[in-house]
Length: 301
View 1 (cartoon, rainbow, N blue to C red):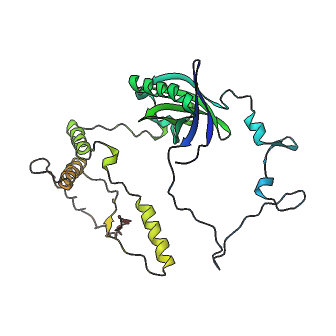
View 2 (view 1 turned 120 degrees about the vertical axis):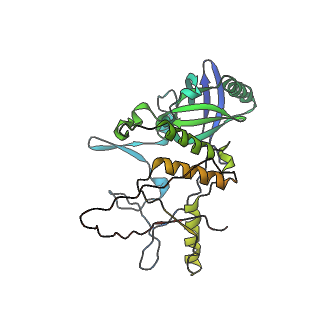
View 3 (view 1 turned 180 degrees about the horizontal axis):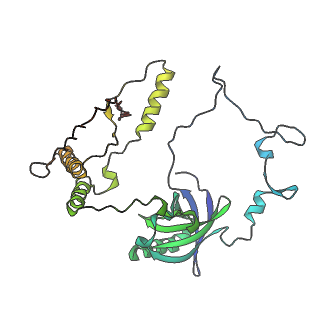
């Protein structure tokens, strides 16, 4: 478990729960170094003071704010002693129903909250169980990494989970990307629902989800290190982007989904052929050559 990144207390009413904050997720992304393409040498950045020209160590570098014609130095102690009510507290401002939360407001970062000490265990457990019984979540404010944030506190198993949230003015209005009004038949909607049902699982954990990009990148790195060719993988045709008969595409998708699951498809779906285009009466248009795009599938582990 990663080390805690913040310590303080949950505050709701007159109840205070000392807690520690730990990341709930971790990254497995592959990072690169910058190199000189000619000889492969690492690129290093050196930091110099523009006044005396000296190269500085990291422990000699602090924060500063440009205020008029001067730079005001801001220390970690200054930030720790800010006159901010949420500087050392997760301040619960309200409780709301979980299903009333607009998911666009939930940011990527999530944190586990752990009770800080034996005394904190009882009010911590009380809050977790109370939230679990009435299906409500707590909306809170807290300060982290240089800014005050909005948070969503909810039970997750035996622990409390804190989601960082976006403020209202950080969520864009979707009207700019709203498609034009389209008339759909009831049959098309029902076929869409059938496809959703055919592709449904009970839990996300039931899916075998693999980061194919990361696997492919590892193969490229290993091949370069071993001075060999990248192992070929099976390829599948990428979607062409052609406009097709919607009902035919839905019915064929349902049939394929059921076939993949080993379910009987006889009589469940009928795929009808697209109508052939009429020949032009004038001159024939020159045939266009198309190249199918390829996408890498999962390589053998």
